[in-house]
Image (cartoon, rainbow, N blue to C red):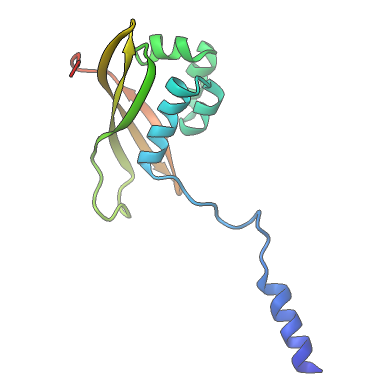
Amino acid sequence: MRTLLFISLLFLFGCGDPSTEDQRQLSPEEVSLGFFKAIYVDRNVEQAKQFVDDPIKQVLTHYHIAAAVQRNMLGLSMTNVEMEIDDIDIDFFRKFTKDVIVVIKMKGLKGGQPWIDDRTIRLHKIGSKWTIVELMPEKRKVNG
């Protein structure tokens, strides 16, 4: 009887509440691509807010629509956008890194013409979550 009680308690306490389990944390690459996908592909500013810190959230709220964010915050209005990670400065182990710069390469149409460009962003690790803290100004114009 004690054995049955012990096994029952083991099963009862062995099952955790799914809401308290840690969800998989996004990598800096996934956060970066998620932000740009929300702005350029899904055109959903609310979706993009989950990837940025509070000061950038306030600016996103001010612009309301993705086209305004593309034009005024990122300086690049494009359609039919495909994107990939071009460069990331992070150590191999990622364990000790708290600050990362990611370059996103975007291909699409700008004014109806094929266009290739990139955008650079800075992410900080806050707790266990990567957050975009800066949309870095572009140093040069790129098309190719």
